[in-house]
Image (cartoon, rainbow, N blue to C red; front, top):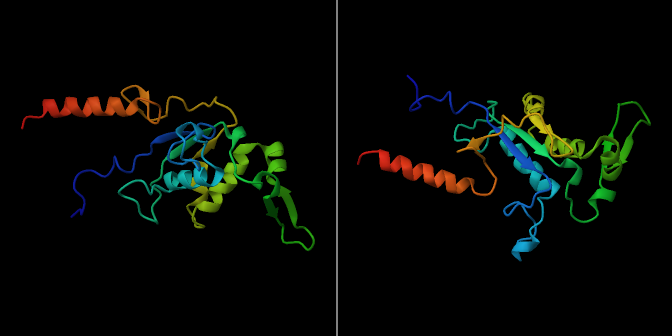
Length: 185
């Protein structure tokens, strides 16, 4: 006998989320006041939020051994926001296990060479658990340098408005009020 109430198939369905790396975000910003000083989310805060969505920790059915996360589309990665001097001082290392083959590259050189999407991918990869699900979860991250991406139709919408855009909460409230009116008490 099942321990769940209702169908869990809908809970395991994957949803597409859209995040802009350059848009100011009120909750992920490092500067909280005054309101006009809200900055885009820094690289670490953005990467941790993306990792949570890729793992599925925002869902009530989350289980560490189950891959129940969603897709994430990140745009404007060319304008990643970092605090301090990380852009010039943070180094990335790679090694092929041969003596003398340690290579280093700084974040600004990596962004020039491969773009901001690779920097974001490395940050998210470091925040995902190191297990057999890591590559599958990271494959659901779609990062783009500009605004254009081929997944526009997949982004989650509510009442025809993309979730996260201004005014989508008002549509949710209107739909919920309409549902309350149709349900007899």
